[in-house]
Amino acid sequence: MSASPLVARTLTAEEIPALCTVVSRAFQHDATPERNEVVRQLMEPGRTHGVFDGDELIGGGTMLARRMTLPGTGPHPVAAVSMVGVAPDHHRRGALTALMKAQLHSQHGTGDAFAALYASEGTIYGRFGYGLAGNRATYQLPRGAEFHSTVDVSDARIREVDRETALPLMHHLHGKVAPNRVGWLDRSKSAWEDFLYEDENELRRDGITRYRYAIHPDGYAAYNVKAQWGTRKPENPVYVREVLATTPQAYAALWQYVLNLDLTASVSADAAVDDPIVHMVKDAIDGSRQVGDGVWVRIIDVDRALAQRTYAAPIDVVLAVEDTFCPWNAGSWRLVAEADGPATVTRTGAEPDLALGAAELGAIFLGGPTVLHLVAAQRIRELTPGTARAASRAFAADHQPHCPEIF
Image 1 (cartoon, rainbow, N blue to C red):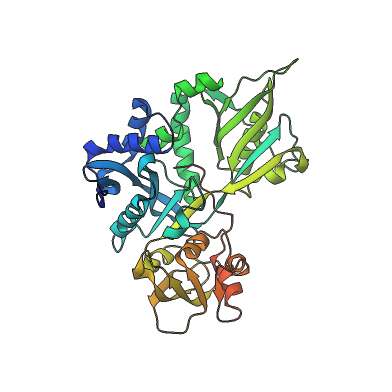
Image 2 (cartoon, rainbow, N blue to C red):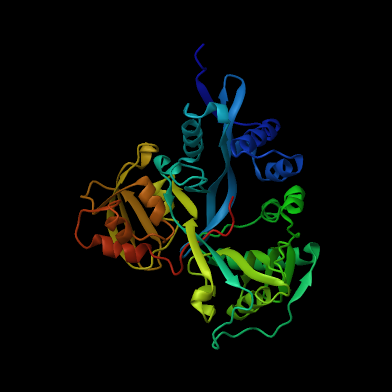
């Protein structure tokens, strides 16, 4: 008997728990009621799709309603794609393609102008027009790593407090910092619950403490510690969930605090590839930095998305966009903007200056990979000499884009 045609549609609230179970199976996890409830609080029925084989739910995903900070203009609505999975016994039948199409087509014209996600495998999402827009670095530093003498460490007292005491300050400070950091997301109450979720079984199995909260008047650090003893002394590693501060002095103070915790040997943290800690530490080779995939971006509507950010330099360029998955984007678009001013994006019949696909446009959208980088990689074609350099300068951001949470 041949398989039924697959159908993708939005889910009702009652169907969302079943999707959580399917996705857990897809990621080879055992679903727990506690984890499913945290995830369910994030998901909206109208923004959550399931893929069905007849009456059987075999996969799906959701688009979290979040806001992401763009260069020059702060937070904008983004379809934060999450909880994507297909049951192991239904792979390679087109379920993911059906889901991606349902998600992107549902936002065309009136929904979110761009989408973003973290990819479990980097080869999956390029065929749907997602481009790697920002990297994520993992830093490991030895306990007691020294700072350069020029680093001003705030003398304000840092206190360790319980979660309930820390959260109001964390919410307040994150709300001040996130709108100024390209790639950062806002956090609702349910998003905070997800970000700081702790699985009791995993903590016991791995010998890891609950999160500890160190607060400073202008910042905070959330971290936990793994029990690990050597033959003669403790070698407990510290895992930083987040260090955030509104001033460089507070940021340095919080890093110094976690780097000098007693009975520990090292500190690991995920951060931006150009995080200040790289240049704060006196001996650069004292630590290590591993860089991997970060956030991926997909432009849903070229005209709406490109007009949402500002540009670091004047730009007047015609982009020939190839996009078979979202065909309304295909064709030539003229992007015009003054430095740090509003942009206009219109269809045009003029000869194009640059030719690129949807994935390449998503990759340069936040100011991470430059146009020149992708020209050198033969991902973007320069049709009018000199336009790639000008476009690189215009699309650049002050800092490398970074999304500090995997969603």
